[in-house]
Length: 220
Length: 245
Image 1: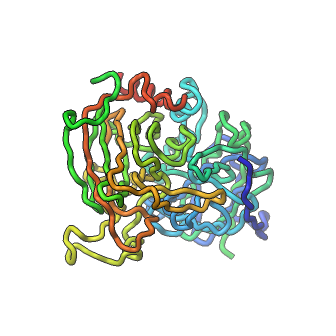
Image 2: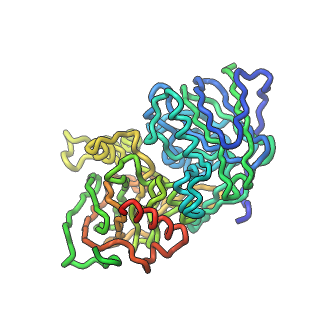
Image 3: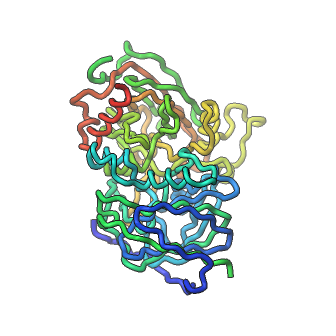
């Protein structure tokens, strides 16, 4: 499907030299971090076409998590982008996208898993790396009290999963490019859980998983 | 168990009950049984959650379901996947044609804003009940909680998207007597709410009733349309069958 929509983009003035936190998350690695209310969080797609599988939890109550259904129905649209408010499973604002040089992000496609890889590609693909294995590793190795049941449907930043008017779902080559970023402001204290996708079987990351940069600025 | 599933007939009926609009239900549907949902008034929305009865951390996974079948909605020929790569249930027959997968349920605060408050003290069983309240009530009966509430399948509700991603609730496909058959390929804990869809454009709270009819159908045979609808589903059914070896 051709890209017949006009992405809405806006860049940011924030200077990475003034960030309070700055880390490169390698391809295939998980990352977990707490953001405070008012902080600004930027994910930069360093080499382009990467899928950044991301979940948010209320840091004061991990039972409350990012909810795609609340977010979609509240904004009346499937894709995430500039000005989208990311809503929780309790309908509360978790973060708001305040800058975006990519233009559109997926919230329907979820995360790859070694089990779903057996379905999508071949029964013998089970041993390959996957985002849900990364999520399990991150929550298993941390003390946030997170459980498999808390791993809800995630956001795929920089990923392109168009839904056609007749209800088809396709995975397209990314609309991202080296250096594109998405930036959001935390509306509550949130735990960020990222799997920087290791998927080698589909074009969501150009068959070549690459690193991303996570940058955090304190409230001005 | 029959080698290939059989269609509904009165003589195979295990049980039959009506779920009034706005109300909620849960129960276990075992491998080889089919549940027919019938929209009695042409106003129904049935929000459903599915869990593996033997290991409830395994549950319906909406993205895996959509990705495996390259679809954003469900109808005949589709399967509902768990997060463990298995088919929990499949849809051998559907007279409706489109069931929403990505809108979830209306929460109680939004419901009050949309329809006003009508509580038990005033309305008894005709009170306004939200899908969130109904499913949470049923989840709690089985030792689950709001942590376990993922995106539901919203049977009988059609929501489309334009190329920009803007979504639209389509009322034109509603009709009384429409049915969808949900055939269970595993032992599944099923939770249902018949409360209104979050995007239902009707200004009044008027969810329709549904009939639930279960029969011993058998599972998907080698020539089943759901199994053969795509190579992904053939592998998904194999994964389910391995669970029962």
